[in-house]
Length: 112
Length: 114
Image 1: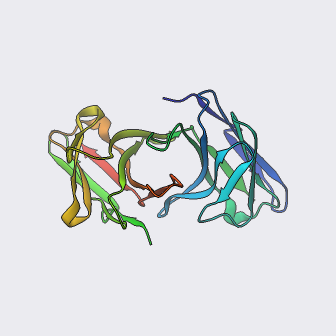
Image 2 (image 1 turned 30 degrees about the vertical axis):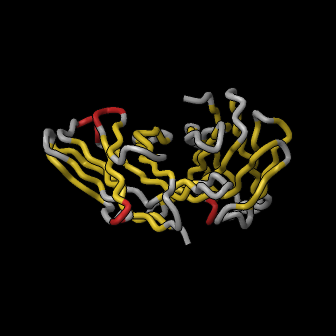
């Protein structure tokens, strides 16, 4: 499996505060993804990246932004956290178009 | 629009019994298809995948899945379930049009009775 780490693994924050989650990979994979997982919804794509500085929106991108300044790092920012953003966030990477996606261990975020 | 349906939210089976988890998809062409497993508090692990060729795909942990184009299905099977198979299972469709995005089903939670 790809070497994917996410930090922090757990975070509790208050409504209105900014939050940044980090995904780091050591596999030199081109594609990176941020998902959120909520009961009854499975995994939903927030944003994805197909190269350094190349990003695009997924199906639930409102309230989130991303940045990718290096191949190995993909940052997810909640500019002003809301309680509806309480979720488990997963990062995934993919090497080529016919490769599979490999997932990180997840970050559990609670917004009070 | 592309979509993935896992009609069973929960399934309970006895240890040693056979298992079939259902997955139906909606996609304009032959998609890439995947099954992932998630143990509690863990990330997702790939069980198997279908890109093309033989429609019966073997995966890890004794799982297999069959792609049936006529039924738009990709059901996951295991002949004899072990207690360690208790987990949540996700079916996913991969977009072959160039974005390489996945669409996930809502998952099926498997409980195994001793």
